[in-house]
Amino acid sequence: MNKEFFKRTLSSLVLFPTALFFIIKGSFLFSFFIIIFLIISFYEWHMMSKKKSYYMLGFFFLISSFYSIYLLRNNFEGDYFYLLFVTTICVSTDIGGYIFGKIFKGPKLIRISPKKTYSGMIGGYFLSIISINFFLGSFLNNLSLKLTTDVFIFVLIISTFSQIGDILISYFKRLSQIKDTGKLIPGHGGFLDRFDGMIGAFFAVFIINFININNWIY
Image 1 (cartoon, rainbow, N blue to C red):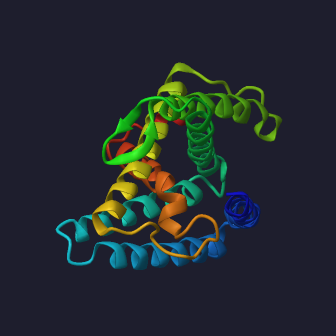
Image 2 (tube, helix red, strand yellow):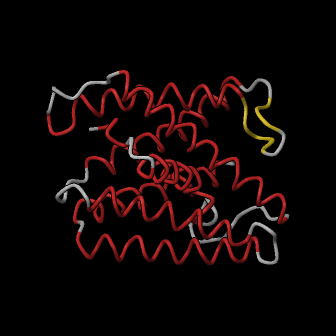
């Protein structure tokens, strides 16, 4: 258990600054970064779900999510605020869900993902709201950014889709009778194992952008 936790922590310490570097640099470096991970996601999904009825639907899901990531980084005059905004929600939702779930345990959330609990779901919401409040108050020392009602609702929506993404990938892994989608990230498994929540969240951003209500966050 301790060895596995050490691997997860070490992997996170490497992944986080690496991703942050490419997000901040932007331009062709960021495009190269997300294309590489899109290809990895395609491969893991292919290996996990080939010959399944939902095979092609998964590719649409992945393309939509990564396209949203690309737009959030490149459609605002080089500003990476919006991408970090959504990423912060996803990371804090994941951490909050893990910590609250481990501490409080309690009844299971849904049958298709046996490890998920109601306490973890609530913890994900709580930590995402708290994190975004600090994020908005400290980003570039711009104290004019506030957690308004619209932003609060947006955070809840993104956090919900992040948790749905996590649940869905777990469900598809069970259907394929595999533990991990790959072995790319020590302690985590594959790319889809680690970033399933983010993929779900950015798919929500794709939908919001499609129906033209993404002005909630700016």
